[in-house]
Length: 425
Image (cartoon, rainbow, N blue to C red; front, side, top):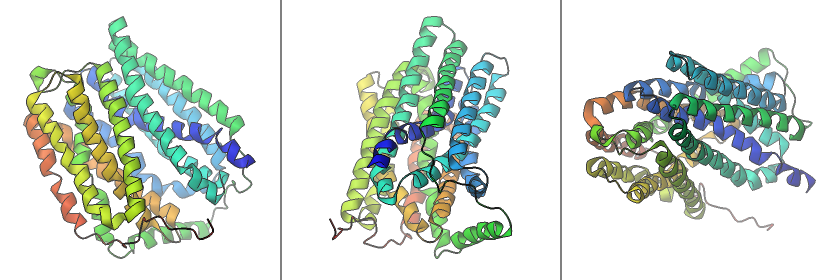
């Protein structure tokens, strides 16, 4: 009971700290660059490259085990992420801020992806197996709270500061200095609060480790139906990756250029708060639904759930409503559907990762998941600039077709995902 009680002191803060840099790199950077008049083409192309550390993190994940403890990695990386956030704040006012901040964001993404590996590993070492299951909802909740804080609260703050100071660069510098202070505090806090598990120690390096490293990859790519697996991982969100990258620029762009002309504060409320809450509720319902009837039963419904609501953006771009409640409702519908359907994707990764190398294989799956977001996202800004917003969102709906095709080839055990009754309980 003591361990479980103490876990409340570090699991919420650990996963809040895991979520913030991801939101900063993937969402705040997009909104900041849009506020500072960078083109959609450049925003989509260059910020999509920031997915790369999450794509390739399985390549260095074993080295986190080999050198130092997970605890050391968590504390140190949080300090380095804080330093990177401060560096962004300092370089935003510079004339060549775009190139410099992109370089810092890439280093921050590398640190964040490495922090993910260490934090997830520490979670498994710091808790007994039954406690890991008990706290999985807690970690997910605080990760989502980080999303609301980043996409909602901090975006709103940036908008307010811009209005009060009349200086976009200063407003965003203040936001990033706040984030830097937050991560300095997190690093110090975790230095003293994180437990010190006996099993948290560096493994010996050498030939056996390299052999195991190669065996792990060989086992994954030797799986039955590996081409279907890879196609599903890469294409399930092919359309959504393009929509997500352009959603915030669309909301911010002026009505005359085809956007909705929302203020930065309004985007923080509509997309960063209402949208994330709807996304979270959809994910919770999706997980519950699968636990009742299994992944196979829900798969096609969830594929439809992810993609069908994309049509709301055709409506928004065609009508360009000025009522923020209508816009918020449309965004909530799309994000709820995405959250509900994304549960199937997550459970599919868990299913194909099961086995002797489940941790490493899941990391490989998340790498392909990130690649499936990175590549379509890179081109989305250029496509939008060529087509305009209305035709771009029509294209997004057409781009959902590959996901439906590859789903037809997926094979799932009818019992997978169903909650099993424990005869001891």
